[in-house]
Length: 466
Image 1 (cartoon, rainbow, N blue to C red):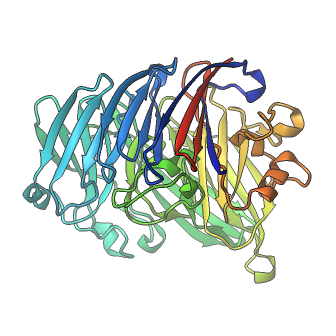
Image 2 (image 1 turned 180 degrees about the horizontal axis):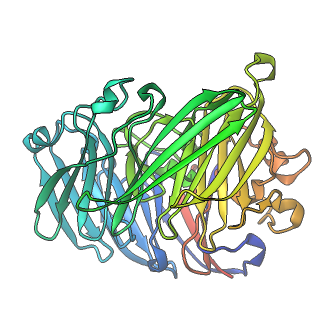
Image 3 (image 1 turned 45 degrees about the vertical axis):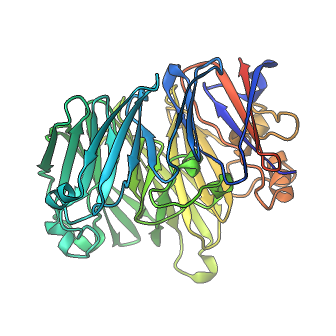
């Protein structure tokens, strides 16, 4: 019997601090084609569970407060504050009518429609991101779709389009973004990073080879919902004794694996370890849908503290016999571009497609995730940059029932778990990835463990308190 278990850690606690089970609720899918597709934390209000056909809203005591049917192919994601949910038909298709439903936690809804002809007046390019706040649904689209062209990207424009759910009023703004002045072949077009109720953030990255290393320049801008630039930040640094930076793909959190693709036909929990890479619109941890692409380094913005994290993977040697010698780096800056701290970890890995992501916890500690070839490692840092290299060795994480391993228990500071560690034994005995374990945190001292049995299609959710 296969089981898929998801650990939803709803505060900065560890498994060893959990008490006995407080409550358990269950429901059953009608067949194997119905799946758990996403889990959205909604602050102190609880969490939303998205299945193939429904949205289920549970409070912090595991009481079902709202249940609503949805269409599996629609894009679904919360607004910035987590107080509402967007259900969007045809997100990512500029040539089709788009129906956007705003769902409140009490089940009431509002709907706006973007007609097929309207999209023609907005853009001939591509959707780069979709996100929203309490009253708006917003789109970032390129004007002509030349954002990937090696030279034409210099003249490409970004359009900000928003619709107000309160009165259905819409507005199109051509953003006055800083012009690309560096070599366009080595410079990325502006991409969405994150947003909150008042603003959203974009970034552009330039990398070039220099003597004995690589130079990186990053520009970050903060804009309000009128499209005005509020702040700009420039970060520049060199990576010495490096052959090149390896292209990585953003994987903000493994819970992204549940994200419904705008053009998907189905989703499965085991897809967690097969992140898809395409230009399609997909969900992210930041409560938005963004177009995915690779980058020489990744950026994570803490919009609450206005901090910028830059992280990536670098190759030490161009010699093919030595190209498994790599290291990841992470750097923390304030919005003035001042370096606060940095850290590096060396490791040996083969030639794979690499996914990296960074999670900021409530206490400002961070976790850097690395994924390649169906294996994952997580490094944890304090907010001051101290590396927490091995939770297991320090006794901060314990296994539950010897079957449930939280994501944190895999942390070892190495790409491959250390020999004879519980994590290494787990990976050795679970090559098919039949069991998937995940965690994320919201502001409460309660933990929800969700277990899916793919033989009888039963889902059990258990509530624990600290």
